[in-house]
Length: 199
Image (cartoon, rainbow, N blue to C red; front, side, top):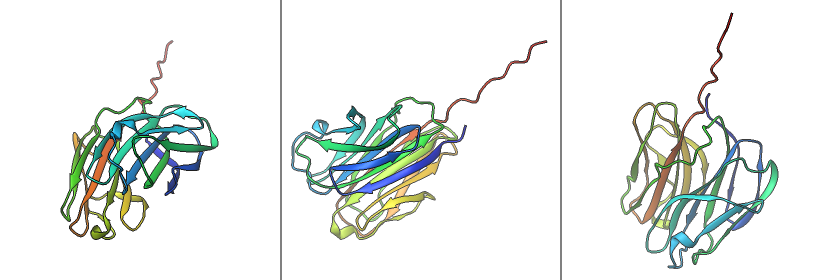
């Protein structure tokens, strides 16, 4: 079964509404004002239900993190992000269908200081890989550079997706040299239904 992206939302507020139209829910957090407390202290909820952190990478002043919620409530509900000294930032939210409904274990994230940030995600063919990127003002507007599909973006931030063709998938961008973070992971396709004929 092919993984499909439904509704998606980009917000600069720590509490905002997302209209979930089925499936799983994933949330990418990127912050330009990380206050210095443990990133692991950051939490997120959707409609009051706690989301599961997939991992994070944190630089001196910012944080990049992904969360997932399996079988979330449908319709418009609030996402609330709290804790960990977290202040401000940008968030990317996707409603996803067609996954195997498992929590991914292949999160990878980097701190970067160059104009060509890149991460490699361990994948299998048919996975849908997501990334989120944030940088200081110096990086300018980032552009995808590994064939990804742009999904949501701002002046110094971006999130894209790419269907994996094999056992590893690169997610990369070009930008001006500067400080930033890039984090990615993939979702597996749901197994096809098996029909057994009997006579």
